[in-house]
Amino acid sequence: MEPREIIKDHYNLCEQVYQLLLEENSWLKVEKKPPEMDFLHRKKEIVDSLESSLANLKKTKARIFLSV
Image 1: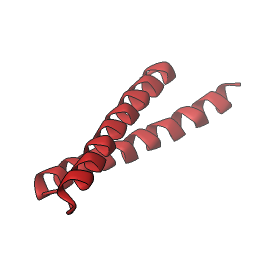
Image 2 (image 1 turned 30 degrees about the horizontal axis):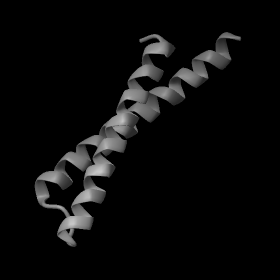
Image 3 (image 1 turned 45 degrees about the vertical axis):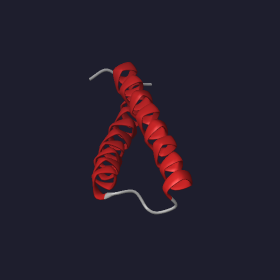
């Protein structure tokens, strides 16, 4: 995958994380209790995706520096 694609995918994932955090914040304000398991499962999935994306970014950074 090209570095530009990796960065674009990571940016999109960051947007998803932001939206999820907004949703969680709204939930906490309204419900005044932790989110339900369905939400926590979605949150865990996105964190796993974020970790994978960060690993790809690190690989991309290494490739960029090696190619210079």
